[in-house]
Length: 129
Image (cartoon, rainbow, N blue to C red; front, top):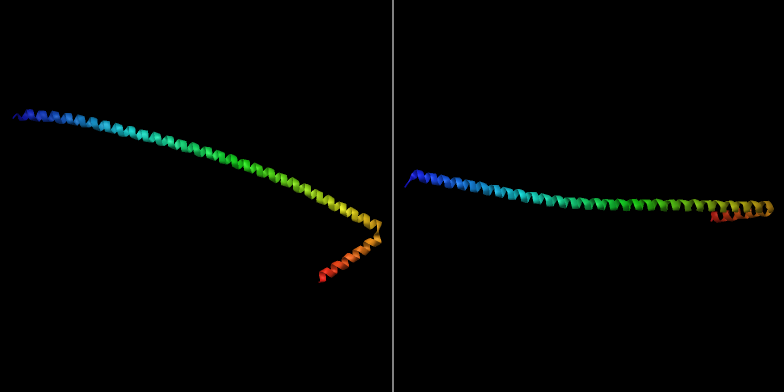
């Protein structure tokens, strides 16, 4: 047996195995790198889609809230105008009644005093009971 030749052959085989192992490690590392890159790309796409959906939903919700606020302001303005109109009509009606009462007192002063006394007496009787 040729010991130096065996050592050389063993060394050559070991070197070849080392190169082969290094190539396999490099290939495995490249596959892991590629798989990681693909996973990151898919995750980024999913996050981008989710962010777009959230942004769209927020815009939609903001638009609906703005529309609701505008409608509420319009309804409040309408109610305010109706209230002012009703107040004006009530004041006009009260003024008309007051004018009618003044005219009646001027035309019939004795009857007005008798009516006032009767109303006072009736109110007193009702409130005493």
